[in-house]
Every structure is written in structure tokens, then in C-alpha cells.
Image (cartoon, one colour):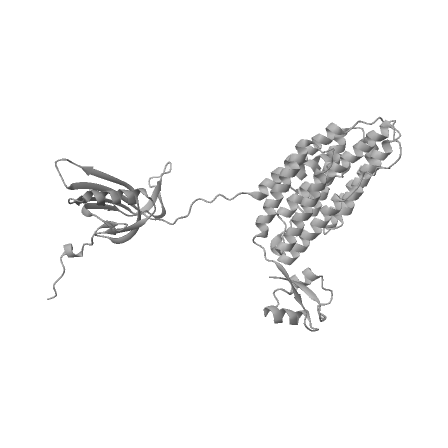
Length: 448
């Protein structure tokens, strides 16, 4: 008959972080995290299981001997240092725990002895709460504030014109030019014929009615902003709340009933799931070109070495402020677009970032810009840099490959990558017209 070890011999020597102690008794708690939900008029509750409960261990231990002071101090120090450590439990064996508390009891009547109460908790996964900063929302917020402030600034600086002023036609021509700029910018991305037709109707109607609006600052500001929001919606193929609000003011006077209905009803959606990444990047590139075209539009041209009357100076100042206002509208819409655009490489996103920064810098250098508008432009520049740089960190880099001999793009893809996955990408990056012929020495851009 085999002899069995007594249960005492099976007990392990207790210790925490390598410091030994004796155990008098212990109590352990295990189980599940059950939350009971009670409902009105229901006899039985609903018990929700939220997972395994954290193990809790209560140990009553002791130290004895002439040198127990040193062991006691080491245990206290180990607990107060924090962090998890190995607990050798006499009954449960080795486990990784954290000591929540330690209580030491000593008595004069019990010399050379101290009692210790431990509370140990099972060590969990070290996953601290991670706060994710919404950088896109910050850009949109900065754009909204800048748009609102720029309109107020324009209204404060705009000088009302007398209806009999012989220079009134210059202001009218400037507004018509801005409408032409809006129509030309839309051509870069016109993929929905109905939207392009609706926008053209607005432009024509504004141009034919412009003599009625130039006398009122608020009318000009809301008119230009409404027309610009119509352009912005056509470019993006969707209707934001702010654009919807601006266009609602525009439509009763300058648009026929039913215009932009595909946007108002959300019938027209740019569903990214139906496009490849290369196609989305190409669409983003065209949208960026549309905003760049709008930003480059000029309304004010100062004639050198020519005396101007006070009325003409007033009109020129109005036109200049109108140009600044449209540029700010464009910058804000441009920034909103690039934060949600698709880029294939670090090179592409860095180019987009630098173009926006250059445009914002050119606005900040205007002497007529208010200090508050200047600060908002600076803040927007900082936020767009932060947003695009965080995206760039996740993108690959473009490198260049030299064709060693005449071949087709198909052969090149198989030679370099072993498949055709990058064929469309290379076609787009290099604007290849004839994929059947790559000449010797040709340089191709390829995404790593």
C-alpha cells in the first residue's frame, strides 16, 4: 500500500516577493461578476454575467523570533513599493498578486511575535484608460469659429455704397467674378450632372440680380457664403448641417424649388465602400484641386500710379475684403476636406499639408486681417498640421524604381511584387497612359 503524504507536508512555505512569513489562517473569494436587474411587474430578475470576478485573498500571518523586526520591515517596504509580485500561498500555490493592504499587530505581552493581516488582489491586465483626442473635431471647430468671425469682420469693414455711385459696377463685377470662380471650381469634380446644373442656376440667378444686393453688407456676406456652401456640397457630394442652413437662406431667392434635393434628402451619398483606395485617393486629389482653384481666384487688382477718388478707394477696399472673405471660406472647407480625405502615401499627405500651410500663411500676411482672425488662422494651421501628421505616421512612403529593360506594367508588377495588387496604384501614381510599354530607364513611383 502506497503511503500518502500528510496534508501538512503538501503545504508550501508562504512568502511575498521572496520575503517569507508564517500563515495562521486564510480566506479566499472567487466567483463571477453578476449584476441583478429587477423590472416592474416581473417576478423574476435578470442576472447579467459580466465576467470572472477578481480573486481576493485574506491571509492572517505572523512572524516570530528575535530578528522578526527585519522581516516585518521588509514586508512593509515590499507592499508600499507597489506593483505586483509573486505570492506563494500555502494552499493555492504561486500566483501574481498586488497587496492592497497590510496590517501589523504587536503586543508587549507577546514578545518576539507580531500578527500580520494581508489583503491580496489578483493582478489584472495592465490596460490604463487611453484618452483618444478627436483631432478632426478640433479642425472642424476651428473652421466654424473662423468662418463666423470672418463674416462679422467683413460686415464691420464693408463700406455701404450709394446707389448713384459711378463705381458701383466695380463691386457688382467683383461679385460676378466670385460666382464665376465658384462655377469653375465645381468643374474639377463635377460627377453628378444634376448638382452641377443646380449650382449653375444659382450662379446665373445671382449674376442677374446682383444690382439688388450690393447695398447691404449682410446680404452680400450671406449671399457669397450660401453660394460657396452650395459649391462645397457639390465638391463633397454631401450636405453638412452648416451648409444646409446657409443654402436654406439662398434657395428662396436665388434657386428654384426642388434644387439640391438629392443633397437635402441624402439620396446622393459618396459611399466609400464601393470604391477602391486608389479611386478614393483620386477623388480626394480632384477635390483638393477644386479648393486650390477657388483660393487662387483674384478679385482685386490695384492700378499703380493712378489717383483714385474716395468712392473708388472705398469700392476697392470692399472688393479686397470680399476676396479675403472668400479665401477664408475656401481655407476652412479645404481643411475640413483633407481631414477626411484618402491618401496613399506620406508624400501625398505632406504635399496636401504644405499647400494648406502656404495658403494660410499668405492670408496671415495680409495687413487688413484682424488680430482675432489672425489668431484663429494660426490655431487652424496648428490643428491641421497636428491632424495630418498623425495620419502620415500610419502611411507608407513612395520610392522610385528605374526600369532596367523594356517591358509591360504586368511584367513589372510580377517582377517586383509577385502579383498584380499594385497595378492600379502604379497607374495612378505615374499617370501611365500605355501600360503595355514601359521603356528602359523610365522612373516609376511605387508605394513601399
